[in-house]
Length: 260
Image (cartoon, rainbow, N blue to C red; front, side, top):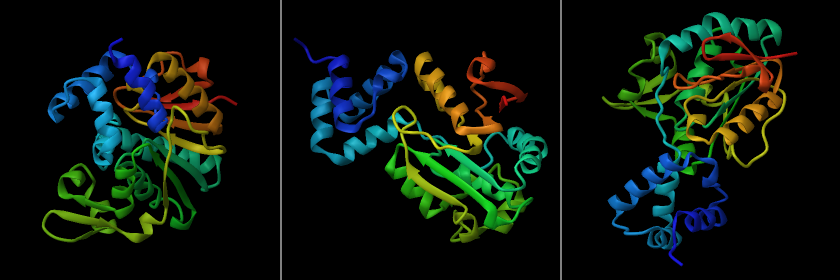
């Protein structure tokens, strides 16, 4: 019997704990086969054996799988809405002490963006952000906190001037005070337990890659993670078509509030 995608998914799950059944199949197969071709593998069996023997190839695949696209202040209009409408409501409701979860945080641009915005309105010592991702490499990058000028292109100058230190013409390091606001850790949205007593969850442009069943489960678990009146902030490519089924109501475009 030929070694096919079904066998590959099973073996990859045993190797990493990542269940590819929960990702949209056509999309995932296209991505995997593109990577296999680039790396010179002619079939799923050879690709899997290659990953077992080469840790760097395995890391490359996980990094490729998680589709790391990130940037400070990405989609500025959404961050303006967050600052003007969402954050004031949360601060008033929860007395300026917020537990925030940046899920699938990639290279850290997003949780650091949240920390810088929050620092305008509350004591920096009270900002607590849990930032998680499935990819060890991007978490290491995020903890280092050094970014190219390109990553900061959409960031308002007030944040760049206050919270970044220039290392050279093209690299900037984020201030240690902002770094201390964020705790990075590894987490698989499709397998690991979720945080509790969270006031704001930010998970943008990730869930779109999951199957409908997996997506629904993630939204239900997000709702369980949030306190009453907590907010879920999703990406510009996403929409909750049936928010009430998951315990949410629309608060603003891309923002959903948990029902009491």
